[in-house]
Length: 203
Image 1 (cartoon, helix red, strand yellow):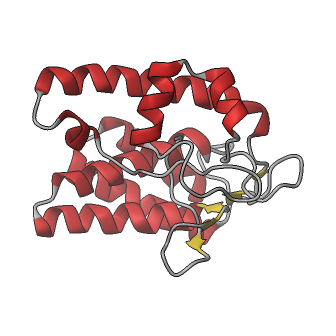
Image 2: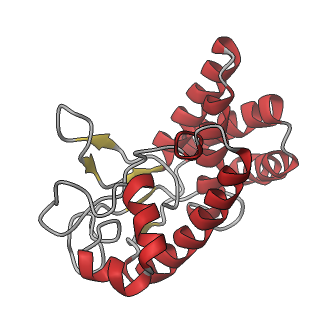
């Protein structure tokens, strides 16, 4: 819901993550998606890169222009992935019927299989597939998505995972490379500003 890549998966089907989110993972995958988007002419890959860079700027921002190392895999109650998982009762308390029906299709919430501590949102059905070519319907679905995402992120905020505040030169160097590529490929001034701050921090 908030973006960013988990560190790796723990099952052969690539459905269950190890819930840590690392700075180096975001940097390397953003750079990979930018390169793949350019070489393969896939704008959706560019969008993944943009979302990943924006997640890093928003969530992993540290002091002085650098970025922190990671978000913990466990939530404040020492539950693995607890900040990302949802019980049926939690969803019903936050979303109305229309929003819950949307979340069921968009993110498979609640899903067909439940982990011990709840359901994990997954990118199950895109807005384009849900709209089936109807541009006006897609715009309405986008508005619903934004509303549902905001509600869920607000509701889960007390369960946010602790931050590892170390700011490591090597991992921040990877992030600087990703920001430089983001400036080149996406022409986003915010990546240049963030890159300038990060350069100064590393110097």
